[in-house]
Image 1 (cartoon, one colour):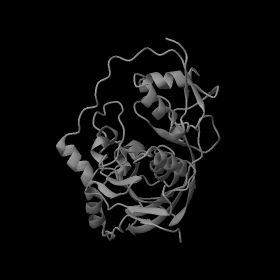
Image 2 (image 1 turned 135 degrees about the vertical axis):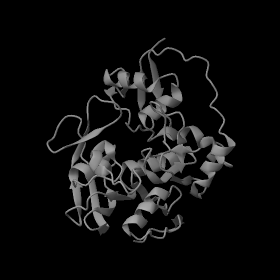
Image 3 (image 1 turned 180 degrees about the vertical axis):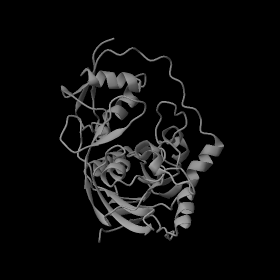
Length: 328
């Protein structure tokens, strides 16, 4: 075993460091990767890096000696049932992108205790392409809505750069309890990972501290009922882990319905579903082949039921489409 140097290929530009290493060093577990990054044994162009570092073509990734992997196992075949399910989620596809309506409860990637996830089922969405599609962003397991896939390496690099450069307009809908005191505004509240405990958990921090990242969300109340609950439109201007959930609970004092992780008992109402009421309603972004892509997903069943319970109008969902130009 020796030190290994990986050079980022042009078609790997804008790939996250952890995803690049999963491709080139499949025997490296997530836990081992985090330890090597934390201790500075993995470096990019001689510098320490984080798992989510976006790489540029020509950069060099230094790896310490890593034991060889056991004989590789083939990825399990996607069952006909799962293939039918995934293909039924497709809202739009062309030569460069696929837009999915991700259901509540389906994890995007694997993790502790997660054996069934979208990333492991993407073979079902290859269609006529030469390779399986690639993830370019993610949603939490319990968040439903619009999820974008790239069908080629150049499209993946383009879309990753768009998300990183904040060229993507994201719109989420949430039901929060109770109604916020303000009808609209901006939440500018930094987030940091909460140490210890099980699972990933973030905390809001008002003063600068090591490891904290600025997080900004615009919000607007679309409807409310007797100050008991409100339907919010949320537009995150940054993309931090659990940003909307923490901003609603800590920034507005109105947790998202069903979010016991950040809202505790206050996030539940007996008469409606206890599932998380957070939905990625729409994306608007540059298309890899030019023009704009506008995508929207209908509310999941549990949120439709809650809307009817509170008397919120269940809105029409516009079709997902590619526009040839970019008028506003």
